[in-house]
Amino acid sequence: MSSSAKAEAVLALHRFGMGPRPGSIAAVGTDPRGALIAELDRPLVLNAAAGLPSSAKAYRTVADANARRTARAKQAQQQAKKQQIAAAPVMSEDQAQTQGQAQGQGEKDAAEMAAKQAADAIPDPGRPIYLQEAKLRTEAALAADIGFAERLVWFWSNHFCVSANRIQSMSGAYEREAVRANALGRFVDLLLAVEGHPAMLVYLDNLGSMGANSTAGINRSSGLNENFAREIMELHTLGVRTGYTQDDVISFANVMTGWTLVPPGDNPEHGGEFTFNPRLHEPGGQTVLGKRYEQEDVEQGRAVLRDLAAHPATATHITTKLARHFVGDEPPPVLVEKMAKTFRDTEGDLKQVSITMVSSDDAWRGPPSKLKRPSEWGVGMVRATGITKVDPVRFTGGQELLGEALWRPSAPKGYPDDEASWIDGVGRRLDVANNFAERLAGMADPQAIIEDVFGSEIAPEVKQAVGRAESRQQALALLFMSADFQRR
Image (cartoon, rainbow, N blue to C red; front, top):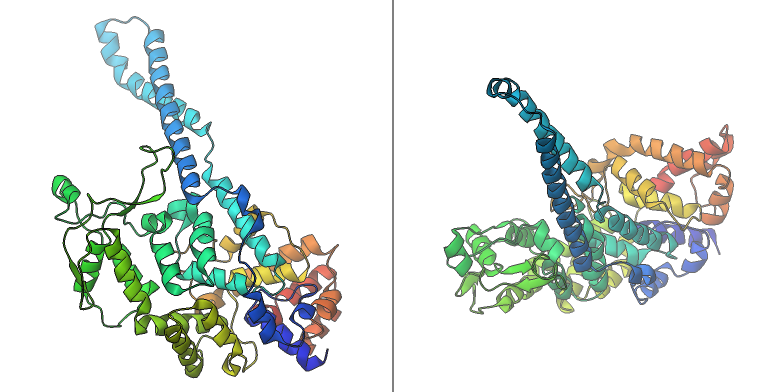
């Protein structure tokens, strides 16, 4: 393979994949565009996912544990009070009055301590589920020949983000069930899947949203929550300043009332699953973006979502974000328009949009200059060593240290995709690189990574610095911190 072919293969692995790993240059071959497209024909399934619970099952598991914790705490508190009463000495009225206040506070503290200890004896199952999901997701990225399809899953998961801070038990299953299953299909199907997923309904506060004239709204005097509708329009579909008004948001929020989940306490078999509750739904038709929707059930919301998916502004918003993520902070307008045209012409076929992107010369021009997000850099670093198994506690801890905690963005817009948002954290990457290099120094050879993994397509100054390093650990850290690892 010629040097130019190797250089294009390495660029393909960095810009569109998860970074070079042993054998990946050969997997790309002399036709990197064809190799990227071919990867999209493979099923986006996680073979080991069969051992993981569904999102609803995970939700029920945590709810059941929490219920047991509450019950144990109450039992312990009641038992402590009984023991205190039984052990209380007989005192005169004056003695009781003098000691009563201090003794009462001590008894209260003791009862609360007993309740806490009893509750803590039942572990929280949400954390282990989260770590199992994180391990499976990370190892899929490490094992991929190229990683283009995995990068698309990561992109869409961030675009339609939820937060494990709100719904830890469901965060990984949400990505598998709603995002991964639709990442190479039609945008409308992806949109319907994510917006109807219980994790999204929890995250964007739609569970208790009810119309003012709904049965529940009248009986409970509760109100409408606009978060869900606003974020769908502003972040998930149309984008900001694309013509919708506050009235549209309110009408759309009314449309989405009733989209909720089955309470796990009421239904031990189906708790945590999506359901449409007509008692919460605002009756009557609604007008959104000038169109009237007269449906009276869940189909009213689905109809609006279908129209939002087909809106021209959605095509532009989505393809701009895709091009920005893969190609550059300021993607070529001609590339965005090509991708947007494919989006419109194919009714949102995301596989065809991705093919249009990697087939365009505009996506390949220019040297690797876009700063990788911490998660991409971390996975790329591990891939280069040939490691395919990870400790999820260590790996998720590293991502958190670098400011991109897995499935924990600080806002519904997800993690940012521009250099300005990440450049100040590059110094912290050195700590992670040094730590990783220290653990791998006895197994990973930096010269072998340069020659065999990267096909010697590394900047001369990096080769020189690695060659002059005082130790293998230092050489690995220098390599991991180089622009060849950090930019795509």
